Length: 149
Image 1 (cartoon, helix red, strand yellow):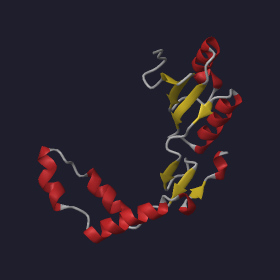
Image 2 (cartoon, rainbow, N blue to C red):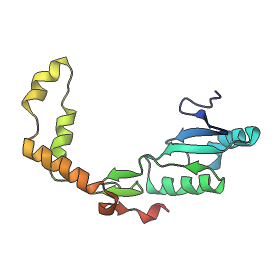
Image 3 (cartoon, rainbow, N blue to C red):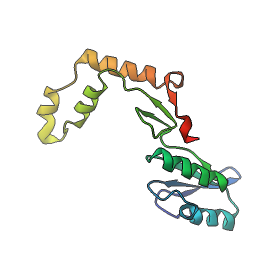
């Protein structure tokens, strides 16, 4: 297995090797992916940007142009996020979602167990929040961010 970074690996499907890598919080320039382009050219294998994102709309737009110019396949991670302008697809936060998030932030270590047990979200609110999430993450209910393409 050849490695360029911890999150990079050579994969092989039957008769079809390719190289996958991830990129986060770098400059959106060709120089950033040049080592992978060199690898592709040296070994004559396709390369795949298996994950990138978690940045601004401007950065995402610029980086997509760079990788597509160099014919690098890519997948955005995650392509769909709640209440986000920096994602290809987004959905609005469901009612009571903030209660779920607040509960998730309560420490669950040994010292925090009693506090965690004493502050669970209201059961009906939790059901409504997760039911709302399931309804809103369906692509038909999401908003596509056309600014990213």
